[in-house]
Image 1 (tube, rainbow, N blue to C red):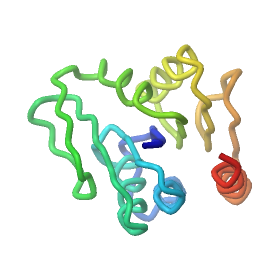
Image 2: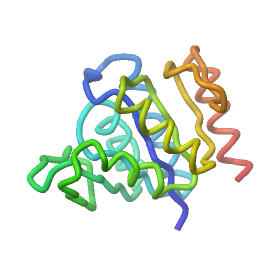
Image 3: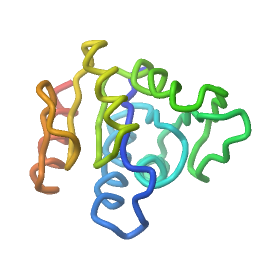
Image 4: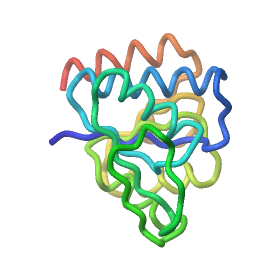
Length: 151
């Protein structure tokens, strides 16, 4: 089963541009038959899972604590009790990593993904060598959609 990890800012608000882009990513992921893996919480993770569910996809949330609440769009909850260390599991469980916005948690996930030789595609995220990063939503979504069509 092919999968894509969506990482990013857990504090992104519903209705914001980052939320909308993450929701569209989730939708595209599911439409192409990929499973969406994320940290299972809110913000970008919730938006991506919401988009995947709209397309009838499967969502997996790798949660930081045993008692972490997940967003309502997560099908399979994996409570780890690992805190931020679970970031390694989020990115190592997929074929491709997509970063939308983000802070230091996202930075750590990007670092682990690159160390594991994962392809990382980003939208308004950290400027790091090895990431295909976009600042315009339309360019990012077109690139990502074409990328999925080629894989």
